[in-house]
Image (cartoon, rainbow, N blue to C red; front, side, top):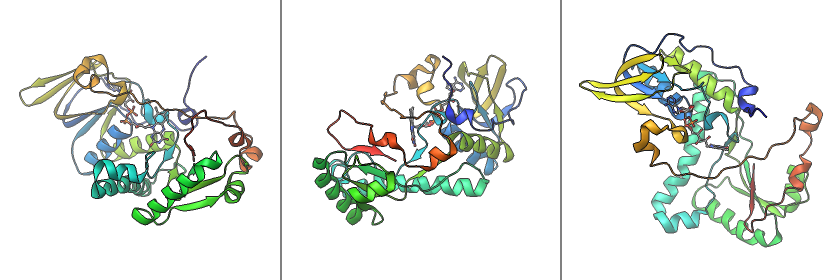
Length: 288
Ligand SMILES: Cc1cc2nc3c(=O)[nH]c(=O)nc-3n(C[C@H](O)[C@H](O)[C@H](O)COP(=O)(O)OP(=O)(O)OC[C@H]3O[C@@H](n4cnc5c(N)ncnc54)[C@H](O)[C@@H]3O)c2cc1C
């Protein structure tokens, strides 16, 4: 079975990559065209820096083109736990950084005119058992008081209206959370970076990055280029030839629940599957 990405299968691929062999002299070379590399490249190019972006496969090939599509505010752990761990000021900054990152992405989308169906749909932290309600209500109160007055408690009846499911006993609603089409966003970011003057190579896996007197020499199977500085944005795909970074990666499990393709009529109805999904965990189920 060929595994593909929904985001890539349903977006227009970036068509602005150069077909030339890897070559030239740049102020900055960015390796890896996921969200990290794309936004670094876009930002540098926009401020007039001569920048190259080099991707082993295609724009958004990595986690940026294979994720859940959520832009979530807040964290899985409670604000109280973060406060106990980091202290109040840092915990508050940590929490706000999530909201700030969504605001930043919304601003980039508007600035670059990226058509990626961004919408503030909100996030629900669901009580899948009656015993979850008290803890989640306390969490909701704490969030409202300490970091985000827009967070709301929804009763079981409210959740039923929202999801069409009988399975939940209440929920914390974070209305600032958003969703978007990750493939269209990644490809739109590449187009924006190219428009601002960046040179983008796809299908050029960087094999070596060697220190030379005035910077770095970067080599791929098609050629090589010079750069004063390098940004390595290769994430969990960091290959063995960057062993120093690879050894510093920490694996984190993630998952996505998907449905079969929905008809337009079906997709306008509440999702019945949500009522049948059960986790074995004793902690509350999170959904969006
Ligand atoms: C299953 C799953 C679900 C997720 N869901 C969400 C979500 O809903 N919301 C959310 O905010 N985050 C989510 N994430 C996390 C998010 O997708 C990642 O944190 C983010 O995309 C990382 O972006 P990146 O640019 O750092 O790395 P990546 O997107 O992984 O990009 C790294 C790129 O580097 C390239 N590369 C590697 N080696 C080389 C080389 N030698 N030469 C050239 N290029 C190279 C790769 O081909 C790749 O394209 C999810 C992640 C996963 C795995």
